[in-house]
Length: 235
Figure (cartoon, one colour):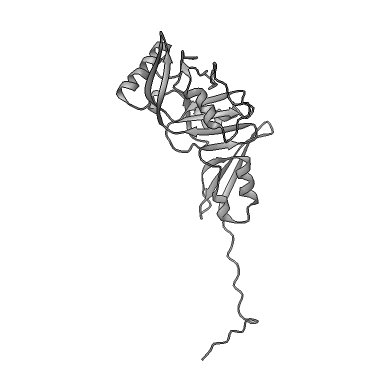
């Protein structure tokens, strides 16, 4: 026996009620947009921790026709690309460090996680220390980069190295080379590391790290502020 369904009189099931999925929070200062963060929203309406999105990712997020597309944020390790600045982070990495006191000397050290903030026009790059390899959020604690040749506000003293004339997502490694491939000659302020108020103490610290192969601990760096507060003074 074949059951015949009368589609003209079949009950119409109501569409499921919409539920919150994603929240965008816009940060501005003096009328200028500073940053945008994307947050997941639980079934109970609780907004989770945010991730910074750039202008391109924001366009995809708002204009996309499918929720599946909203899961794609900016690529790799970039946090923000707003047409004026690019912000990205690097994880711990074992590299050479060149220091020059009486003579050039190469150390093998583990650089801590770092946050880079570069202007698009290549005029300057600022570098800060991070507590872990995790992707930073607006509430992440930032520290003075525990490195020489960096000013107290995070700006890198480039010396003979120069940033690309136009910083893009394709040449961030060139920006990083201005730091990693330079010769560290002196500290530019006394807050690079706890107890390392002079260039000698600073370099002695790194020589010791090179011998012991120990990583830089967050407790050894000097806290500046949360990422959102620091960005207000930079962007």
